[in-house]
Length: 234
Length: 295
Image 1 (tube, rainbow over the protein chains, first blue to last red):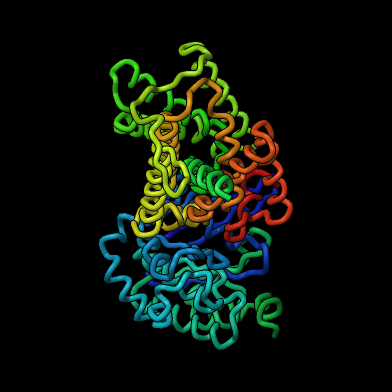
Image 2: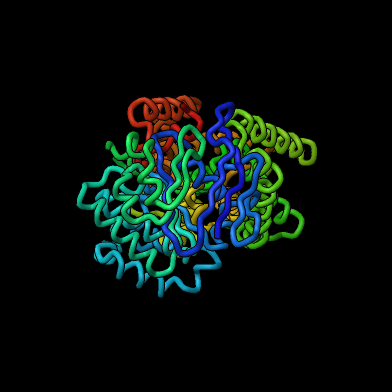
């Protein structure tokens, strides 16, 4: 579904990505794991078009998307839930969700998708007229994912959804991601919560210092000596 | 006592127009994030347009709004597309150079074509007044205030309740995330700049029955609008409205009890005080003035 071929990415002189290649097959949960500042978020930002990559290509459904604008990429069915939620804090929960459906692709389905999101996150329905800035951390994360789903995506990319959430909430969120995946949405998950992520992901990519150092089915990756030592604390 | 109320009323009435012009700037500022020093020149062009339509065709200034507002809406769109968009990602200094240059060019073009004379529109109602409880109210100033108030309320409703308005507010908060939603940010920049220019132009139309137009007329209004936006807080329409009234009242009292010549010193005094004490603006919602390029 999504293929990244040897892309590089720079912030000024700093090279954030070095010849990164990845493949995200349709219908799978794919995880991108690694320490802070490894380039995971930059990879997502390159895919959604917020940052420009140099060299290589990004192909979605056979179409190169590397030079398109973010607002055009979302029309293809790629939604990006950014790190830190980034809700529109002065807009209400419902307005945030409506903005998620701004694209031509999603606008006609706004009612149906709103129902789906409220069914998935009932608390958002209760708080629909509250401004997003007044939500708790967990509710904000739900709203951010809900807003991503409102784009009617085929590929949903979620950046660090477990950051700052309580262990119980983290567990709930991973269960919800599994539910979303079961409804037919392909998931690309960037995480530092390695245990939880590996429990639900089909494929894992390990990224360090801008490189993909390991890639494969999660079970194989979890058994790898380096991963065991550096990520699983075994 | 009567004098104080009289001064207060005059201040509030002119403050409404200041609020209108500042709302225009706040829209451009909040959405497009450009520091538009040519804001007052939009006002100047609108005033000249109303003047010439009156002089050449005998058109009433209020009626001329039907032509002048759409024209300056398009002018704003054009400015955004041709001048601002190419430097959208450039440093704040670069943007300031561009808009200051634009302001100078427009002022000097006006000077070349229309001379430096003070021009006024003669209307039958320019001098008409109402008297309420010994307070004298100028009719064109009252009209200016009421129309300004109605337009600001209209804009507020648009931003609050329409899909497009919500998208503009989303851009004010975070234009990158707005793009991720599929919001055509560049197109809405055009809309915001056009609307901002049109609101300012309306300010010019409302002023022309009781004030003169000349090439440099815009300068003080640019200054006032900046101060009001800082007072009111970026993106806050209600704050901008109150900020406009506040500046109007301060000017009115300062002009009566201190000296009209010192009014700009008074503006700047308030400006500096607000920056020191409450940099997010009196009614701002957190981040604000630091983004105006004052950091």
